[in-house]
Length: 91
Image (tube, rainbow, N blue to C red; front, top):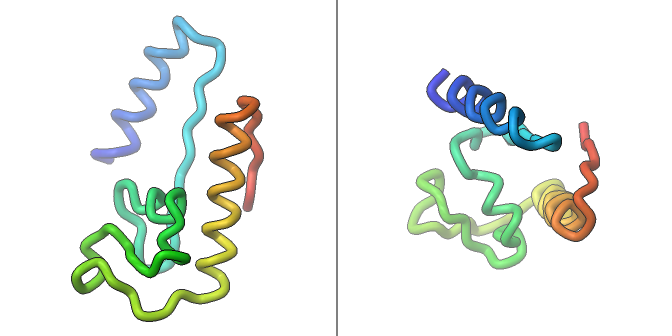
């Protein structure tokens, strides 16, 4: 309620002046909090460091193949959006 409602309201206000508004929801098992996706945007599963309070000193000993694949998918999505403004949906 504290994150989604204000975000939706802001998007509605901006939409009055812009034709393209994009929102997304990102969550993974055990870590669905504000900005957790940035760990995947900036390659944390490959560097070995997560920047969140879910780890001890930001370090995670082992990342799963699923986390590394998710990281590659998120990087691809953000890069493609930045490059050409196209939105791809992953379910």
